Structures are given as structure tokens and as C-alpha cells.
Image 1: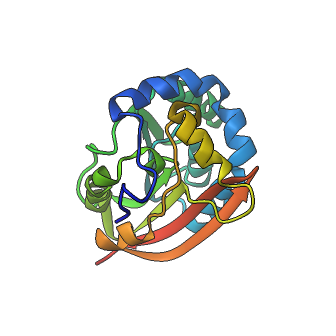
Image 2 (image 1 turned 120 degrees about the vertical axis):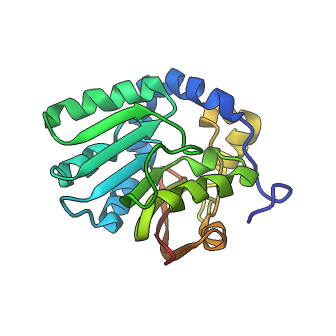
Image 3 (image 1 turned 135 degrees about the vertical axis):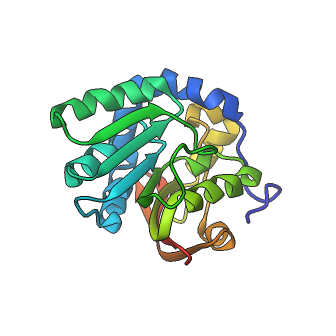
Length: 222
């Protein structure tokens, strides 16, 4: 696992994350379209959603990915959770156009998922681990592994360490004001996933408006 003395660690307490994202919920869609669209779209491709699946999105935000999940899985079970009530309200507004599609949105935490053991075919998580302290990541991955079926699919998108020109500007912003970055800093999860019982099949680097993202498809080791 990455060491906090070499990498940027989380500096916004978890107890404050919900409030931070309540405050930025009204502008998050714009930020997401400018910096995260390519990575989210690629993650949805890698998810290979089939209608009738049980899918959980943790940290659903304003529903930018969840809308597409529900649209592609209208006869399955779609559950989205988030810490921020403000973000969930935006997600609910977005999903209204889908009418009676089978989905549920609720307040929840990645540290204590309410789903039964081995109940999910796919778990999607966008831009959350970049908010999590390194020492706490294992507890969340244990929960992800618990609720996924054997061989279940984990789709992750994170802000990652910049690899191309200009991408390190976000590190400087984070060092100056973590909350201005919504608490996000660059992480790389491949090794951490291996250490906690996941087989990483794909890890891709994407950059949009200088913002660096990693997109990962992994499977629960049987």
C-alpha cells in the first residue's frame, strides 16, 4: 500500500466530507463534465452492464454514472449510495426522466454497506478513494469484497498521480487548499487492490483538462 510519508494523504476528515459535498453539489455537474467525462465513460464501457444484474454504485454523487447504469439495466437491481444529501438530491432529479426504472438512492457509507454478502454482480465507485486516508482503504475494500459475488466485478475511477504535462497543478492546489479540491488527491490503487483480494485486469490513465484519472476493472478473487 502507498505510504503516507511519500504520497499525498487525505487531509479533509471523513466526518466533514458530507458537508463539503453538500456545499459543492450545485456546481459539481459542471466540474464533472469538464474533467471526468472521459474516465466515467470508459468505466461504463469496462463495466459491460447486462440487463438483469444487481449493481451497486458507492459514492453516486449527482448521478452522472448512475443514470447510465440504470438506463442500461432497467430490469435489474440498481442501488446508489452517497454520504451527501445534497449530491443525492441532484441524482434524484437526474433520474426522474427514467420514470419507474428499478433503482434506489439512499444515504450510506462505504465503510458499512447495508447489502448482504455476495449479493452484487458489479460494484461501481467513482472518485471516492482519492478522499480516503491510506490507512482506511483496506476496510472499504473488505466491504466491497464482502458484497460482491464470487468473481464479481469492481469498477473504480480515481483521481490519480499525474503522468503528463500540466497534471501536477492539482497537487499544488491540494497542498494549498484541500477543500478547494473537494478533498481529492492523486492515488494509485492497483497494488492495494491486489493486497485485498482483487485481481486487477485493466488499469488505464486518462487526462481531461489536465485532470488525471485512473480507470480500473478488477474482479473479486475466487
